Length: 398
Image (cartoon, rainbow, N blue to C red; front, top):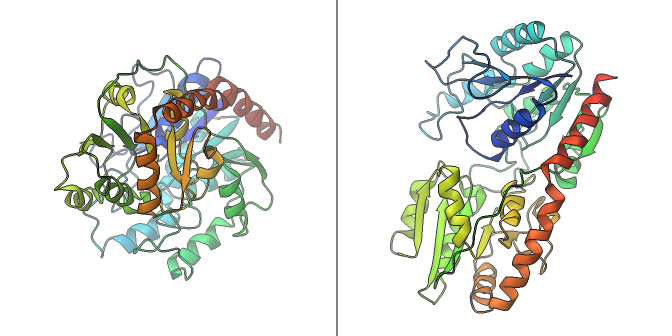
């Protein structure tokens, strides 16, 4: 079967779990299928060109610069005068349409699987539709109904009065008609359906898969080690986690923050006087595995409605219990009291209380860890891929 993946970013350019997921399924599917990938490139790098079979991968990769004023390769320095123009072009980019259509004509895939397309625009769907190639769309965020992808305002409040541009986004989104919509959680599927999207598409819940592999060997530390891995934005609630750790009254707590993002400066400022909090930036996989080996617990403190949270099953694979906010799909991933605990979004005191309890109860922590390992089996990549192949077959057969 010939499958074309569409993703705004693709390794080695990575901002989060979505592009890593696309890379993993592309590499695995290339064992039995002909895989091509359409993705963006930073300005001046592969601009207006294609490259095939980038070593050491077996998939054909087409990278291009989408002639926009801002790209996905920067977190900051987005001038206000540029931002509205960028969003306007990002609604439906004619150059992306032409480039995507040319690649699809060349590759002639049986199905196009669209992932995050911010920076590419919804024109990727139009290109496939015009060539009568069925599309499958995996929803990784709220990009179809929100230019920010979070359904939050600038002050991180729930967006109840959408801007004119947002309304235009939603009007165009209703004209996107993939054959199949895949959502990693019931929450995001129900949320997008409530906006009147995907009335003709088959809707499928399919939690994202993770690769197995051997868990890292655990290191016994005298410290209580707390781990956060993810984007450093206020909507992710990192400031809530920082304040919770600062309120702990014991010195052996350690908070390890891995990732990068637009709010890293303010987070470092908030933690500047607490030596228990360490920022690592982006870490290579082997360095991250070292932190997995010492982590007692991980935290997903989001204050916005997460669509899934790929990092949660990855924690489970390493036997790390997860504390998560009751936001979006997170309660679908964490069984309260079994493989972690849930707390109200933004509640510093509630999170601090849970951290304090776990730091002094090694038996409870051990039970949660064992249950976390059991939970990882739910997200096995091999099972995920079999279900994904069945979806492709149904889409390709009409």
